[in-house]
Image (cartoon, rainbow, N blue to C red; front, side, top):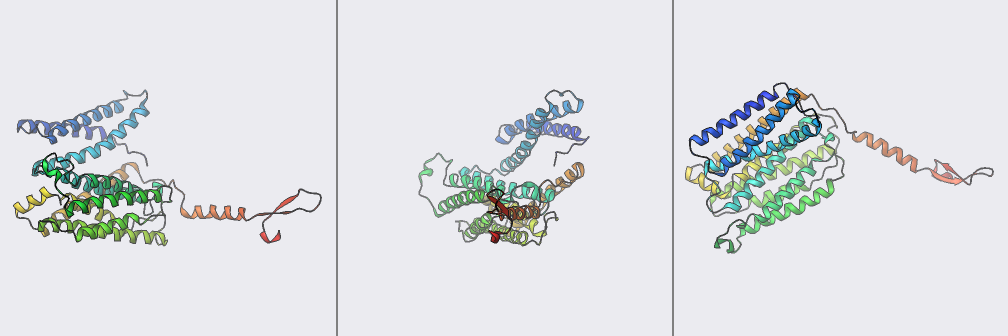
Length: 382
């Protein structure tokens, strides 16, 4: 599916640049321009101004030479801006709640990075489902390939950021606790399992999905459910994360089973259970980000119990998925439905049967007066 074009695109982008500029002005008036969030805001504003200027030039026809290459860069920049905008929102929450500043920088980075990766995987899966149908044939690869890439990256982050990796004080030489060992080996298992799943999914048909990521989700979820912290609130928060992972793994296995059994056809609309996989992936990422040490201390000092915290995370997860669905609906309304470009599994079976019938032909001796051998479709005639 091509990117959607709309006549209001330049006006909306100009409005976004003006809103960003007002945010900088308000931050300058209140004296809040000396932190990392404000510095990243300058970068985001510069990026938006460049995009807006390029869009206006495209609209007015001022950039006709090499316009295709420039448009490609413009689209790539727009895709990166989505990630940068999310990073800016996370930095805003960290700055507002004064997180990642109590001597747990490595652990805080690990939780936010891995949780954000899970949320990105869930939103990407939602886009694939809404745009390409239940089997996601036009993606040309099983969704587990993309999930496995995210798992591999998350595994690397978890392996090297748990045991005070960014800590420069003498505490970095402390002995490893059971929490450090468990989180580190969870990272190693995600890295190893992600590599295996990538290898199995690299050249696979979109319907030939592997259960390896689901098994890793279930194993990690069980480890988090029985995981013990020194604070009861922290143990409960990790329980929420583990329960979401177990439900994610089970729902994904059910989805794979229903697709493999042929209950769902190639071009059918997504099943309800597939949206469960999206929800639990996003909720597990949200729970993981909210289980960092500084956030737990903030909740304890604010008098928030784990039930209230779970409902807060659930509400944010619903709102995030609702917003993503609204964006997909707007995209489909402007660009139209996707055109099928990938052959169904049935056509591949027909081609395979034709090749099999051709290969079953054998060479048999030809009578005198002809060539030495003739082709026979019956193997027994030879």
